Length: 327
Image (cartoon, rainbow, N blue to C red; front, side, top):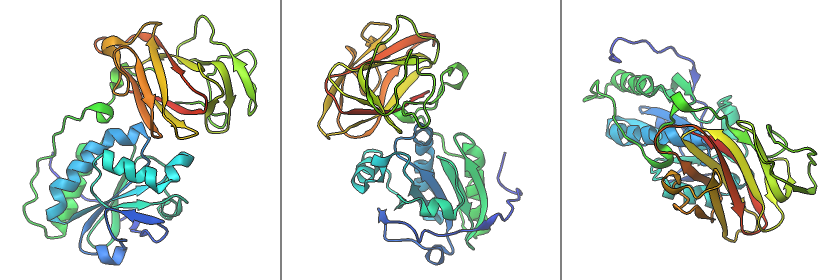
């Protein structure tokens, strides 16, 4: 299917980035300064697995069409408090090879100017500054690239072929195993949390929890000393652990060390070291270390996907556990 002959309606005007608190990889950009270029605006936050799985495509589009008049602008609007820290975002930009301009949006000013509600979200503006296409969430990669091609042709750019990029992303950028994904995103703070298995849940105060002998699918439990805060479960002593019964190829967990010091952790799957099922941030024996605040891939299951129970235990207090995601 070709982008030639397709029609893209005018949705609105490109609002601009006046509320950005700063920029990475670029001086501040404005709609006036971008006039004549096709602009792809990508809303993201660096711990979001849904955005991470789109990054390979956004990066490829930025590289392929840069010399044809496409400008990619990443708008980093944080989900978690630590993602407001520009140093954390700068570290993520470097680690993830995000070379295109990034507007820092810690107060959601740009987010609100676009009336956006999603991570990830892509908006395409034509050379006259009119938004002509948007897509929320993952996938639709061919459709989005076709829209880029159409707007570049409309802007009079030459050499725009009909081929779309072909990538084979790995690591956390690998596409989810949707056919076998049976576990939902699960928050551990009381604001959005659910499926906690515990006889007596105490919110906002230190408490001691016990992991039951068995968990239902997609149920999770705490063991040891924890405080369930608004956004995260926070460990209060060494040996605190989390268990989760899951059905997915990948298990990820967003973590932060409250004191900033590295915290070793140990992952077990069905009570045993993960071996070949270990994720990027865990070795075959299940050992890993929480260093910077980010998403940690704990499990990548080879072969057939079935139900398993993950346990992660932390060697020190002060671990903030935010959300499990799966792929």
